[in-house]
Length: 185
Image 1 (cartoon, rainbow, N blue to C red):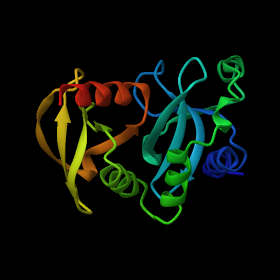
Image 2 (image 1 turned 60 degrees about the vertical axis):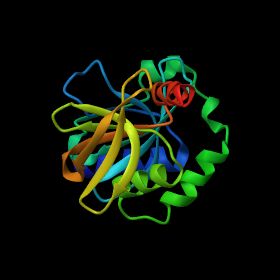
Image 3 (image 1 turned 90 degrees about the vertical axis):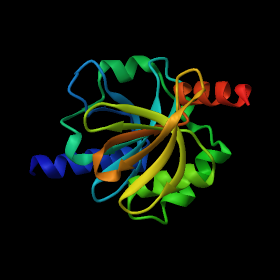
């Protein structure tokens, strides 16, 4: 069995059995996503993430080409004792139903967040991070109303989808910024 087949098998198993994985996709080995695979696309995956305490921490899309290491059955995962993710929130169910009808993970997430007015965290290939609300998008680019960490309006950015390395939404960080944004209004 080739490495690529093992890689795909681990991702499939995670999706089917909700097996938690450590997904390394950034240059820093100290930073990685922990969770189970919610969906697999041709070029990317969608992870249902947990934080270091085993609490739900939103969703993260990761391009397959950026994944350089996957941990399975590690002590870190074992010590989390994370059986809390079986909770079936209505947003979670809506997301699963929505993405199951789509072929492109990134476009599905952008569209889902735009339709549901969900704050999206976008990490670009150069490690620039933009938090905000999607205003417009097409198959090549998006316009996002960017917010500072305190929820105040930063400005509007045009982003090429090819420059996006990962996305996150509904994590504690995005929820905090969104709460602050709504308090300012």
